[in-house]
Image 1 (cartoon, one colour):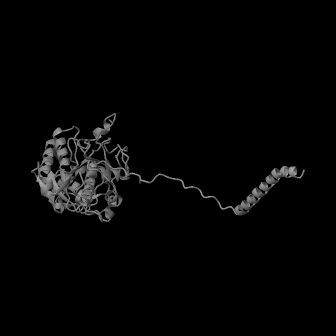
Image 2 (cartoon, one colour):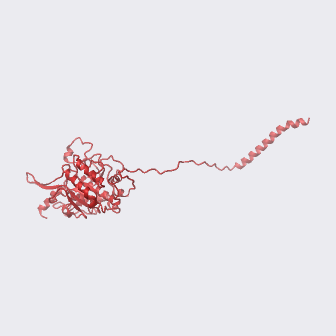
Image 3 (cartoon, one colour):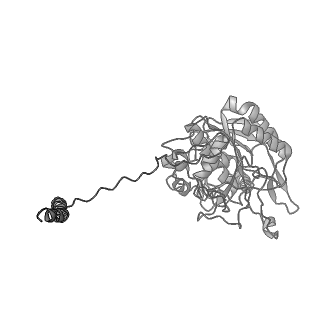
Length: 402
């Protein structure tokens, strides 16, 4: 490969952190292996060495569901067709230029690639960004990706109109976010939820600018992850912990997902491995889990899917940690015996009905001397009666003898 394409690819890697102006993205160098000119050039990730697949018990989960027939819409920077994702469909809202940003391609692979959470699901790519190379005063080039809420709104409107009927979309992945609420985008997302599509959103990452801000507000979660009906997702560190140092936090966060070491693909079909913390990478794992659940039961509402994911997470019913209900548990989400109403309300198990307790009459212990006592009692009564008669008849008999 010539130096120019190699440099272009590396620039794309550095720009694979979508979500402007408010990033919900990871830091630089999201793919550590298989990248030209990298220290590990040609050293592709080993599919058998995937720590995330092990933590999430994906092998066991895939014996129950692989997400077959479920469409996952990736509203992002676009997905490179050379990545080889099966059954992929494309729609462009914005971005007619050649694809240079690998963010959407990586996201798609984490959700439904051959090593993703739902390898049987199919991707519907909706491109909402444009990328362009810029040169600064010192002659250094970089790739800039721009994104506007109105384009994301248009993408979701298209999915509501065509996504489910034509492409089987049941899950929308938004690895993006904005600092300010946008009424148009909020309305579009609510319409998608009403139409039966689960919406998974990245909660956001801490940038250098955010680290400098003090004090930290009670909630920093980006919009639209702040919406109640979406599944707001954050990422865990390599040791499966959650920290403010890398992630934005807030009570709106619903669940978390492990991402360090997860395997996906980059533009031009390069295999890659996630090597940093970013909620952009956690969201597609949760989207993949939603697809697994919907293949198993397509009748579920988005609210039912959300509740099932939450109550089977590592934190179970608790919603007080920085990562909400905790880390997702795909196998438990597919096997837990839960009764959830269509509005997402979990029906608590009622205790079994039992008749009131009635104590039985105690049985007297057997008395070995009962017969003897009865005999002695009757003899006593007889003797007493005879003595009483003698005492009463004695005076009468004495009078007759005089």
